[in-house]
Image (cartoon, rainbow, N blue to C red; front, side, top):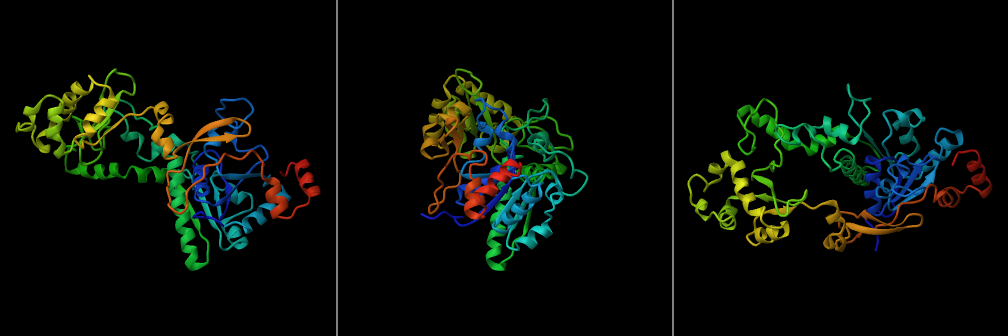
Amino acid sequence: MTKALEGIRVLDMTHVQSGPSATQILAWLGADVVKLEAPTGDITRKQLRDLPDVDSLYFTMLNGNKRSITLNTKSPRGKELLTELIARSDIMVENFGPGAVDRMGFTWERIQAINPRIIYASIKGFGEGPYTNFKAYEVVAQAMGGSMSTTGFEEGPPLATGAQIGDSGTGLHTVAGILAALYQRTHTGRGQRVQVAMQHAVLNLCRVKLRDQQRLTHGPLAEYPNENFTDEVPRSGNASGGGQPGWAVKCAPGGPNDYVYVIVQPVGWQPLTDLIGRPELAGDPEWATPEARLPKLGKMFQLIEEWTSTLPKWEVLEALNAHNIPCGPILSTKEIIEDPSLRDNEIVVEVEHPERGSYVTVGSPLKLSDSPADIRRSPLLGEHNHDIYATELGLSAAELAELQTNGVI
């Protein structure tokens, strides 16, 4: 069966997380992703190692389904080879610091002249302006994109989210831009530039908080559990952020992840009152309507928690689902990695690696009926040098050996 992006060549000049997360999705969709690394390799091959002298999980989990070549793009011969690679590619992706690729001698104008059909995607920390040259990391993007100021509890400090919305979130946005440009090329025959900033991607994911910032001009936000409001959207703990109130309530035996997140919809209030042993609240004017409950959300979830704290979270989940009450258990990373349904859906996947043995990785969340993703291991450093340079570009064995001796590959 053919893949959605079969026949598309991606020149992957990315490193760490934001760029590799984007190119890995393209690889899952069937593109031939050629990861171009310096002879020393992507820095994450050696970061956060759990085993000595093998590629780290940090690297392997972001670079599956790719081929790896090495190239010193600062050398004259390296620049010539890079030019040939650009000419043969449909997509080029990079996430170096601002201006780094330009300084190599490959401006967008030069790249476009080499290959007018190429789609050149760049990921940066920030857009043009006073922040352009700031160094961007995952949590820096969260800090400057609206996430941290609105994450945490009212009296606590701003918090980072465990989800990598700055890096992998930007990678997803980049894929959307690349695929749109690829589709437009079918009409125009021309490639184009795609640029995505981490700060902008985080802000896009935080748009509901900008919604609430504007609503604040009309008074306090009734669905927030906060008692005091200023002219900024407050941190609101585990409030749902949507039209229906929600909260994480404790369950037995009281461990760090013994919680269930519960959403209280109007239709769910009556069955909830039965479950928590307070059926009289269903008809009580002080509790019967959403408007009556909004001023006392804290008390409402306290009443629910008095019931849930006596039961394990899986029993709470079963009871709530029996009444179609929206809910979900807080799953620890250990529970997720061991979850049979996630393995059955191939979103938690075990992969064999020639040096580190078996490891668990995240599979493709994109399920296409005519283009199923085969999750393959990450490449060894320079594993495909011969395939690309000799077989495809026609370099002789003697030149390959010379390039390696001279540190070009």
